[in-house]
Image (cartoon, rainbow, N blue to C red; front, side, top):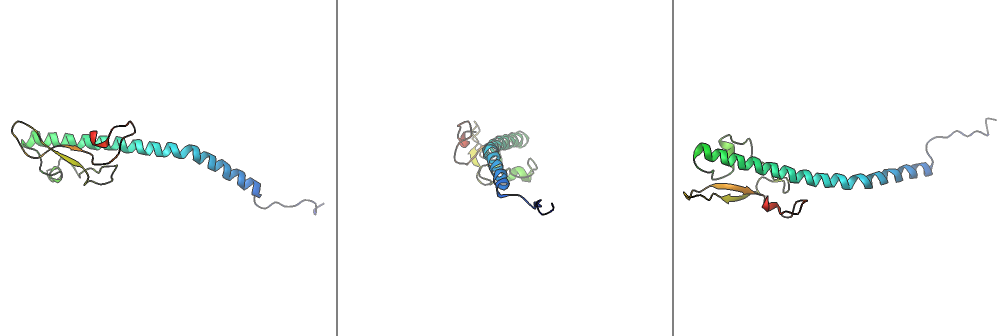
Length: 129
């Protein structure tokens, strides 16, 4: 009787193929959602970094009566811990600096925009944010 019963060690080829097919199906469902949410999170992070930079520029102007000449001045004066990174370009050097425009013709950075090429998920250019 012992000879008729074979001991199974491991998985059959069919079982492995079925498991691999299920894993592949789950990945095709999950990966597009993951990458879409990753792009949306970069858009939100960019908007938040722009908001922080603009608030810091405004606070600097209110405190000092002038705009900073470079973004690093905000760090030196303790308005920021570090110049935020543009999450799209992954660099702090790609910010587009907009000169201040007021009646006194003061020099300095009045606004900041992203220098990233392309558009957000809702179709706006990164430079418009």
